[in-house]
Image (cartoon, rainbow, N blue to C red; front, side, top):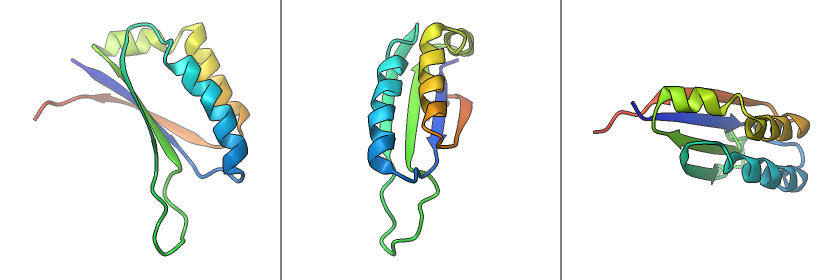
Length: 101
């Protein structure tokens, strides 16, 4: 079954500094083995100026759960996750079974 890893990244205290570090993490992400597609997105700010539930999302698509699971054990994943951890901005990760509708 096709699998997607979604990273949900919280709001950084300093968006400019975060974006510089994120560029390196994203460069590592696209080298994950058996990665089929990548989507990086920035959450739109709320019109009333209140905090958003997240700052960015990163979706990594694989042909199978096995491929996704193997990819997160590689040095490329270490660079991706390590780069995100170094920013100090909390994030969550989800593995999802992609359902075709």
